[in-house]
Amino acid sequence: MEDTLAEMEVDVDFQRTQRAYAELGAKKLTLEERKARRRALSGVVKVGFEEFVLQKQELEEQQLLSPTNNEEKLEEEEAKDELHARKIKAANNLSRKDPEILQINIGLYCNQACSHCHVESSPRRKEAMTNEIARRCAHLLASSPNVHTLDITGGAPELNPAFRELVKCARAARGPDSLTIIDRCNLTVLHEPGQEDLVEFLVKHQVNIVASLPCYSAKNVDKQRGAGVFERSISALLMLNEAGYGNPNTNHKIDLVYNPGGAFLPPDQTMLESKYKEELLDNFGIIFNQLFTMTNMPIKRFADFLLRKGELTTYMELLVQNFNLGTVDSLMCRNTISVNYDGKVFDCDFNQQLGFGIGAEKDDMTSSTSVTAQKHLTHDDSGGKSVFDVETLSELQKHDITFDNHCFGCTAGEGSS
Figure 1: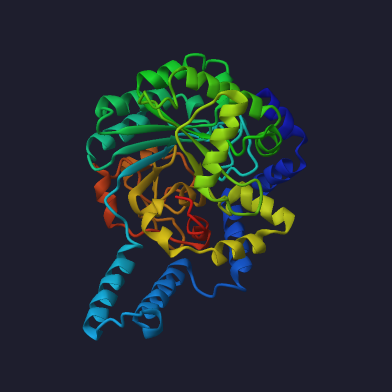
Figure 2 (figure 1 turned 30 degrees about the horizontal axis):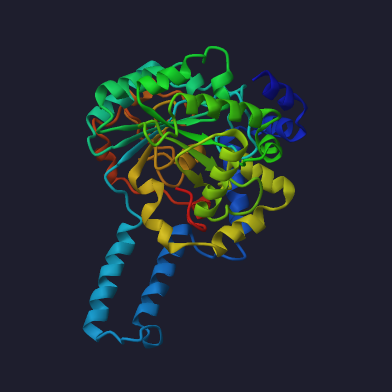
């Protein structure tokens, strides 16, 4: 953490962003960022994300009915039935399902300050979840049997005082047969003071790990995440392997996450996973279960990076040009509820960072919450629902999902959900 703080002191871009936050505030900067994305898309997209998706679905339907694209020349009635079924599916593809995943951003404190971070975590961020809110989340897990996964993220979630309380309460509420618990780990946290027993804790409570490792080479990792991060990450992976993580004969899963180091899309996931496994095994003796490739979202710190490089327009156009209709059904916002450190609920982690709360007014996201909820909220904007407003996560299914221009990041290529 000391290394990260030292780098932040001399990072010109980071200092410039911090001054902008101090002068304008997070809400104003988020609005300006949204306008910048809209301007970047003005030459390629004339409609909003939802209308864009529907237009793509209608185009696919027209191709279905075209004799030139249907050698069997479907009978008219059969084609109409198929078209009707597709329209129903299209409408459902943009609606919320009964939640299956509860993702909790437990706080923004982190021992790193990565250039791509969409939550803008760093050692200077002190926002953190309380034990009371953590226990409330565990209560909702107990009352929401359809939820099969608890996904804990941050910041470095393990450095949050409520992390262990949340894990213990969640595991007490639901056993490993009905609930998978995931820790979004940056790996280097294992070397932080006070975390000497972290691996033992994760094993004891049967917590799976999804770890960020943006490359299998030191140069690329350190460029994106800070000096010395690769070496400490490799050391942490070896510690986790020694505890049984990644071993097919144990139930301790560890998956790795790759995200690009610039304004481009990730390569084919299957091919890259094979390369990762080869390089990490041959060079370090490291094993893991799966690799997930993630597209960088054009929001917050990465959006700022794109603007400084003059690449925001090119990147937004790239996302639209690589729109994949097949990703829409599996968008995270459709089956996930995202909870902020202050207990407010969102469609996804990205909407959370932009302040688009579930149950808030869509235009300005400033509707009021219940009196009970307001007692527990610490965020500047009290709009939308919180974990104290519902007794089960299924109650949130009735609320529409908020889509905006950043959503093209989740539908480009193989998707990012």
